[in-house]
Length: 114
Length: 114
Image 1: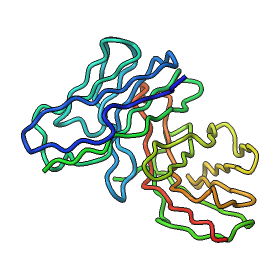
Image 2: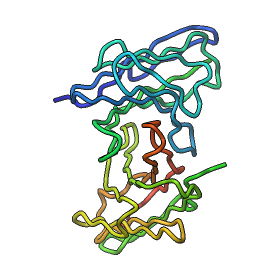
Image 3: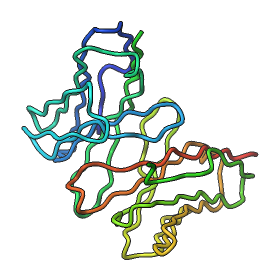
Image 4: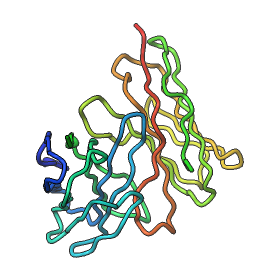
């Protein structure tokens, strides 16, 4: 049982390049989330998904797209990376929303955009 | 405007003593609160939570207190141990939010002195 895994762990991009971050969970969770954490800040929600085939915008969605084609995977895409997207990205998942709202987090992806 | 505030960026406590971490919130719709612990280069891990129908929840050395009238919660760690040194995030959610993730504070860096 690996929990929540993220690929890659580190990445350096040049401005304008694109990339996809992959999140996978093996806990059969319905809900999945992408957050970013910047220095001195808490985690801020980028996008989330309440089930396979569904996605929705969070607090800071601009410049990102997501897809949830399979229940266990949640992809975060950057179409044209900007230096402002330099951050640590965390994926999370949870089983329910109305009862226990504990979210399980992956180890993070550290992204630098030059 | 920050809806979840942790006003102490850092806190230093002697080993064996009590650590008290504070969190304030402004959104009266929040009805579920969580504390997460984060070590460097790792994802946040769930510590303890409390529903707004309670004013206290205890789990081993960790106790969370909720004062709804003051919109304030606190995490008590007794006794503090070296392994407790980490960044602690307070997070909040509300059931009417439609599973749109957690709102995090900026975190408090707890340092346990030997």
